[in-house]
Length: 375
Figure 1 (cartoon, rainbow, N blue to C red):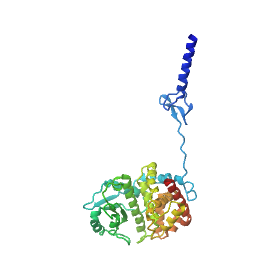
Figure 2: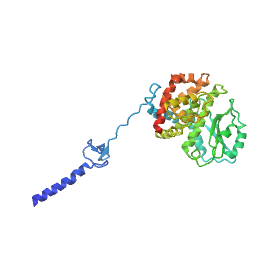
Figure 3: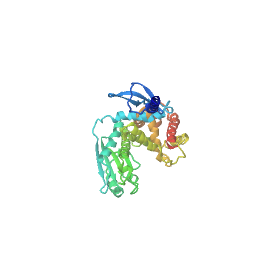
Figure 4: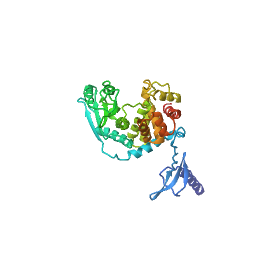
């Protein structure tokens, strides 16, 4: 009986302890520092944590994504575009501006802005940091109005002088910025003879344009970039300017998406919205369609049917340029253009490749990203 009892107890001990020793969990105590065991599909190692030795999961090393450095490796390394853009932008955003920026907001008598002036100032300041090496304004006037106050806005804007010969005056822009009670959240970024000027429609409705900080900041950063563009033109005494529409709006959107982000992960999230637009005037996002889009939006007057894509496809195209040459390269193209070069010559001077040769590469890179995001 004793032998049987001993055997039974020993058998019970083995049955209990063997599974228990195998059932390792992260955080459990361990004995031999450095010992490695398998836990499901992962590895755990015995690690000293404070005064205890516990099992910790062995993290896999992050796979480095190659960043593009030129048009020669842009297609191969296009997945590194966001990281490259944010690395460049974050350096500018961390710096302080050399002078104080003054922002004045004038509202129509019946206009209610749902967001604080600090959101306006945030978007303006961040955009100015990204364009800090180029001509810019240090005073800004925001003229905000709802549908009811459009006549007030026209009268107020008629008192402001432009340094350019405009097809549409500041007053004319009011009807475009605010075409109805509900369609009244558009804007124009201009400069007057002595300040930046943002003509801003305000519906006051409960929508992202009025309540989402990221959207508001991006919106004002976008319009501020237009004031930098025009400050560059003013530097060279231009009275009229005609640059490709995909670039004229894609560049401000590239600045705005960086300016409204606080980290790489947030930048990646912010850019995702621009990779899922409704198709307007294009059959698909193929390379052939993107290439055709560039043709339609390269020489003014630009095609009206595909115009809305200058904000999204234009952005992703300019973003690729930023990944190669930094955000400053896009302003440098404008500076060379304003100095008297054609856009295509200015483009080649900055990126070392003709627009004709660059277009199919950009079309491929843009197409790949849109197809991945939408299918």
